[in-house]
Amino acid sequence: QGQLVESGGGVVQSGGSLRISCEAPGIVFSVPRMSWWRQAPGKQREFVAAITSGGVITYTDDVKGRFTISRDNSKKMLYLQMTSLKPEDTARYYCRGTSSREYWGQGTQVTVSS
Image (cartoon, rainbow, N blue to C red; front, side, top):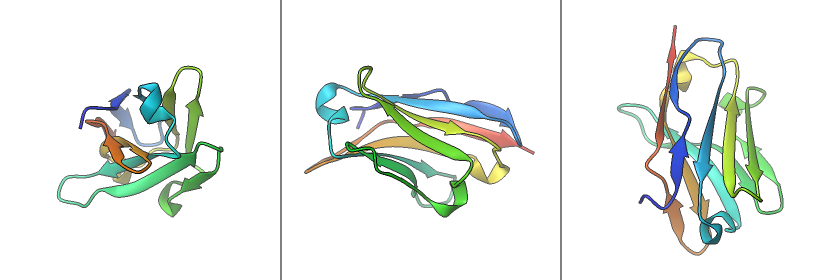
């Protein structure tokens, strides 16, 4: 753990927006697939969105139309733009890099009030 660093979490009202970021060294950022996962208290960690080195994007149905995943190759940064946030989106969000091995960050907390 600690090979990736997430930031940008905070407290927002329902219907609001927030952008979280993930910073990684080149060797990690260059892996075939980067993704965002989240975990709420008492629940299993679940997949949110992913983007491959070629730009292919995948979202879980719960966030389609509301969240946007993107990457800046020059800055070696991964982003998740969240809009129309709901209380059910409240969770700790984690960045993940996947190749022959896995890389994880410590997560950033996102809390959506009603």
